[in-house]
Image 1 (spheres, rainbow, N blue to C red):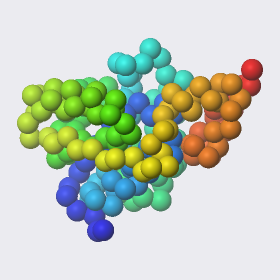
Image 2 (image 1 turned 30 degrees about the vertical axis):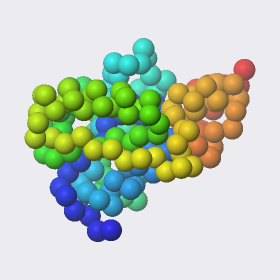
Image 3 (image 1 turned 180 degrees about the vertical axis):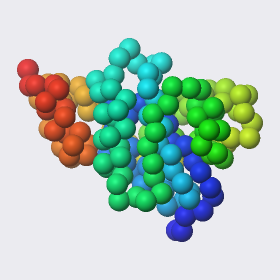
Length: 166
């Protein structure tokens, strides 16, 4: 599939980025001309992040370095403002399960109210990543579980440094 369709924003906390995230970003890069991965500076739904915004941005940039139409930015505004700032026509998020849909449906309606010109789009997780979440990866790493096949190599190394085995 050749790139087309302008700019899309793929927002998230990415704390940390997983191979599931990288899969969604990679697949999105095959559909849109420009993919802006937006790293939320201070996520509202999380008390605090394990990695700061710059670290999370750098992990994603390294994991997507081979995708020339992908760029990574940190943002601290409303998502629709970030999308407008980047001339994005759409916001794209990955969905793993029904529980993801319920939350994302609500957010899509709020974003549509703020800017009806920016579409919300969803990509279904690849089957082998449908169970994968940043929270699950952090929990596994905290208790010494092997996560190297779930995250980019730089993230696995950083997790082992930041979360020494108990």
